Length: 113
Image (cartoon, rainbow, N blue to C red; front, side, top):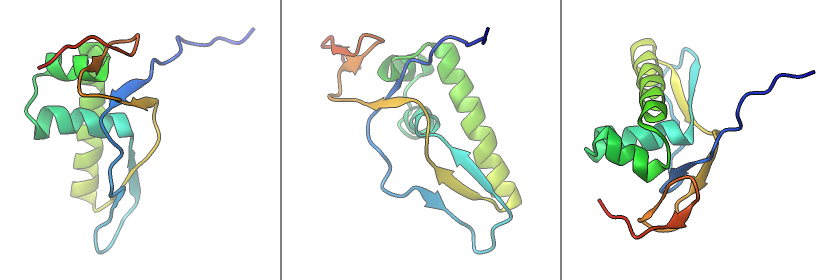
């Protein structure tokens, strides 16, 4: 009998980044940032959405958003402090089809921030 956890619900992201690798002149390793970790950082730290707003936009709970932010910030700090390459790839996500699509059912509810 294999034990499997709950399947991950794909997180909504707005777009794939154009640049996916950030590398210092001399790299001492690598960290991998997932697309949804980058989206959480973009929404909260760059666009100044509240965590509640960002979690709704990504179709996830505030707790999951908090976990994504914590993980992403730790990876970014590690890369900056230790001179590591940041590679953006992977994760469980779907691209948002419009600015208002939120929630686990992935249909447009006409919700706006």
